[in-house]
Length: 332
Image 1 (tube, rainbow, N blue to C red):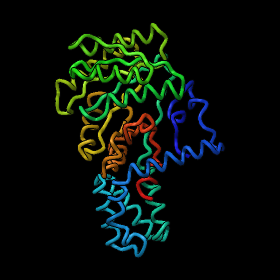
Image 2: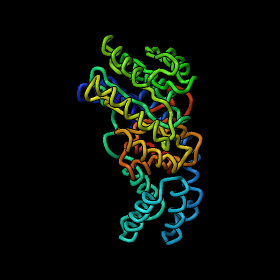
Image 3: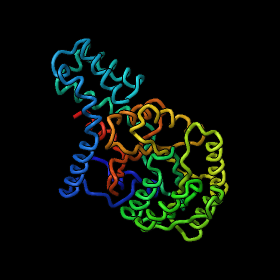
């Protein structure tokens, strides 16, 4: 069964209660519907994976098969290192007679891709009171949209009270955009004056959350290029300000990466992880790219778990990442 929001969050040391009953017919149908939508959203990436190999993948397993599979995985931005590991493993198992062609090969490919995507702890622990989540990323990756949707799901799915901190004080429209999302999500927003120090806004948001007994505080930060050293340094400053309020905070630092950027997303993730402790990835815009394999490259090469994916503009199009579901949607 695919993960839902209640599988993603940890509450009191356990997954959040009240999720859909796996034996419930309605819940099963909803999950199947989500998989069908995900499969359609990943159509471009799936076509990139299969178009080059389907002519040979189900017949003889020869050198041409492995070459075409390798080309297809690289084209889908799975990454050279990750691709080499997958193809070498398949070829070794085929040589040893453990894997044959046809559906067996497709199934094994799906399993290997899912295993690669499954790294670290891909859950979000919200047991701290309040839990502080910091969202970072490059301009245009869908940071603000992700924050609004995440706040909505926390309130709607888990009944959590949420405060948003508008610490992106560089972009004039950022606060206005977050205000719209806060209203739509039914959550509180804390903002500063135009040009205010981002750290002070983050501080005020956490102070508000603590004073009013909020369950979760989500801090927006200014979108910045990973090559802008001064802004990256400021990001570490915001993190220090947060930790002065609550020593363990931020409890989660999520990096938004635009899937359409392909391997550049891997470089972004590497440099952001050097500036702040990135605990998870939000991979956005998967519905508009043939480069969805970047999720596997980042997970494999950096060990950063993908926790959320964005596959559209609707509220329900931000969803918990499920490695098995993702791999199936890519390949089958």
